[in-house]
Length: 78
Image 1 (tube, rainbow, N blue to C red):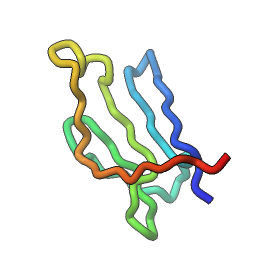
Image 2: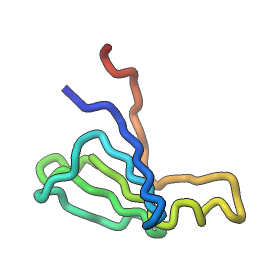
Image 3: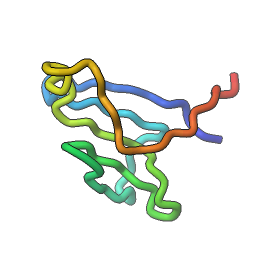
């Protein structure tokens, strides 16, 4: 069963963490955009976590943040 999507913000590092599982050592890392790091499942290649660096700085000149990913969102089972 998939975990719920979580968001955690690190104020000191100015990093937004988005994930559907806890990070683990076997995950592969890949920079997929301007200071955006994807943590990938080593077997399936699916994105399990995202790290958006300099998160608050991205909104100084715009109010839109686009990520270079496609998402398939659905309600979590209660």
